[in-house]
Length: 445
Ligand code: GDP
Image 1 (tube, rainbow, N blue to C red):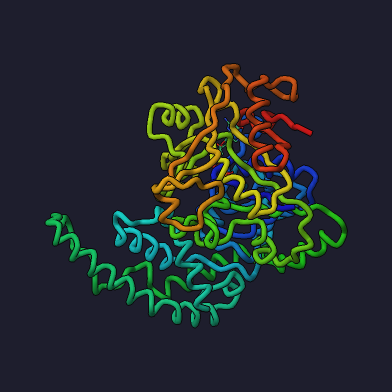
Image 2 (tube, rainbow, N blue to C red):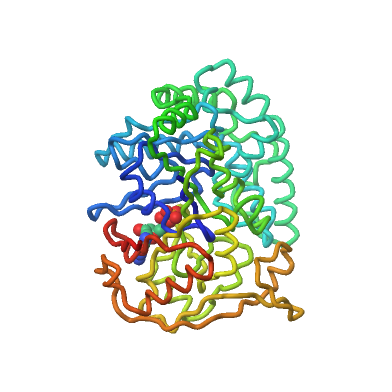
C-alpha cells in the first residue's frame, strides 16, 4: 500500500504510517530527501525523522530508503546516532545502493541558487535536494554504492565538481554585483570568488565519504529485491511518500514544488516495484490546509483565524522551523489529489485543531479573475495564482476532541464536516486524528 500527502505536505503522514505499519513487513520511502520531516509522539516521547522511514520505531520491521530517495550521508548518520542514543535499534534499516547522494556542493548550490532568485525564490529547504536530483538526471550523480569504492568515488566526484565550481563562482560574482547595486555594506571579508571553498576539496570529500561508506555498509542493499521478496510472500509493504500531491514536480504548482514526484505512481519507480504491486492508496489530509514556502495557496487565511490555526496546530516546520501558511480546507485541490493518486481512502488529521474555530469553511470551487467558475483544479498557473475560492459554510464544534476514540465520541458537527469532505472528493475517510499522540485517533469504517 502507498501512503501519500494529499495537500501541500506536513499532513501528519508520519503518525499514520506509524499506525498502519503495525501490520506491515516493510516500510519504504521512495522519494525526497531530508527536506521531509515526520514527527511521531510515542509514549510521550517525540521522535523527529527527516530521512529514516517512520517505521523504524518497530524493531521487527524492515525500513527501507529506496532508490528514489536522495541521501545526505551526514544527515543519515546523524539520525542513526540519534536513534541509537534513544535506545532504538537501526539493525533493520536498509539503504538502496542505487539511491543518490547529496554532496556538499549540492547544498552550496541550493543556497546560492535560492539567494540569487531573491524575491522569486522557491522556498526550498536549502538542503541540496534539487541540485542532487538535477545531477541524477545529468548522469553526474554519486550513488550510495559509490561510497564502497574509493577509486570510482574520486573519479565521479571530480567529474561532478567541475561544473559546480564554475556555477558557484558565477553565482558569487552575481551576488557581489547585486549587493553593490543595492548599496549593501560589505562587512567582514568579501565573498570568496576565486578562493575555492574548503568544503569542495576533492581529497577531503573523498576521505570523508569513504568513512561514511564504512559506517553505512551494513545497511546498503538491493532494496528492490527486498520489496519483491516481501510482496511475493503476500506480506504488506508500505510505501511512504514525503511532501505531497500539490508539491509534485510534474503535477503540482510548478515551479513552487519539490524536486521529486511524491504521488502514489512514483512509488513504483522510487522503490523498484510494478504498478500492480500497489493494492491500495491512502491519502493523508489535514482538516484544514497549510503550505510552507512560496507558491499559490487559494484558501490561505491572512487573518486572526489563520493565526489561531497556526497556534493551535503548532504549524511550524519539523525540518526548518518555518511558520506554515494556514487556510481553510480546499476541496477543489483535494479532489484533484484524490484522482491524481487514485486514492482509496483518506485519513483526516488534526481535526482537534478546528475545535472552537467555527463556523467552518471549505472551498468548493474557484472563480477566475474574469469571473469564470472553476470546478476543477486549474492546470494553468496564471489562473490558479489569481483564482479566488468560493466556500461552503459548515457548522463548527467547540468540544475538545483529544479524548475521542470511537466514532460516537465525535460531535455531530465533526461527523457532518467529515461526511461533507468524503462525499465531495468521493472516497471514505477511514481514520481521523484528534491529537498528536499515537492513540489519539478515531477509526471510521
Ligand atoms: P508529516 O511530514 O506529514 O509526517 O507531518 P509532520 O510530522 O511535519 O506534522 C505533523 C505534526 O502534527 C506532528 O507534530 C504531529 O505530532 C502532529 N499531529 C499529527 N496528527 C495530529 C492530530 O491529529 N492532531 C494534532 N493536534 N496534531 C497531530
